[in-house]
Length: 337
Image 1: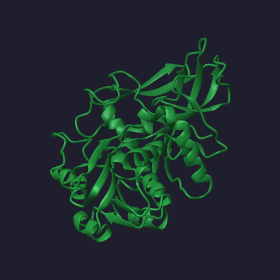
Image 2: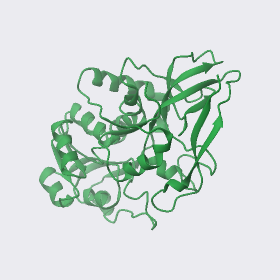
Image 3: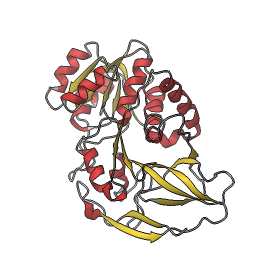
Image 4: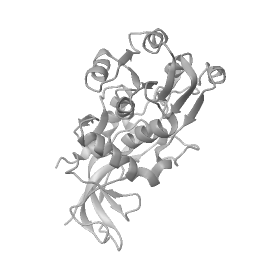
């Protein structure tokens, strides 16, 4: 069968907020799999803040997307042709397939997912890399103990919403920081957070004094900037800060704003540690098994913000992420089964 692949390739490195012209929309014939390969039809794309960093040149935890290359993206899809004994036609799989409709793969970094366990977008969120980021970042670096206060920024997003729920499962007091009354209401009413701070309408430092009177034991940071600085003023003795991301800084055209209150780490004998989920690749199965157990038991809620429109809708969907339009995990549907 003759197939055409529609894909987005990086045309230039963005300055500030990405523009639609930073990508080229390309059509090309779909090749047949060779020995050991299989062809995936991409069904859903994961839309993540990290994508902005991947578009920049320079040293990072992962090589940048090269000019002319397919835009990097995690995705779930279905195998439609195979010459690899480990992947059969009809299998649903997850991997870094990119912003395109079809992807040839040799199986490296690809895992089979079970759509009977959860809807496919969930395998990009709570049962995917974002859920695993929350799981390992909070448990291995944050190390929360029952009764401690856990604060998470970007709390209504894909990672933050799972962090807060896991902290509640572990018996912690959880305070979420998010933008807007609706998001804060969802944190408390739907995700079970003890309190929520609306950084758009509240003074974050004052709100932290109310909601964390004994200090913050664990801070899971997804945004950086002024909010990180505010939380640094409220640390408890021996606090642990997990640096997961800094979405407030990704589109800056000026140098990244670092924390001015970092001496609080010394005063409170606290630690600040960066985390990248790829470092836990050999433990993914462990994390997914536990997340799936909590999900099946109703102790963990998964929320996906699914947008339709296919590959062509990617630029605008990514911008929506930076505008804070999503609640939970943002997913772009390429083909709706």
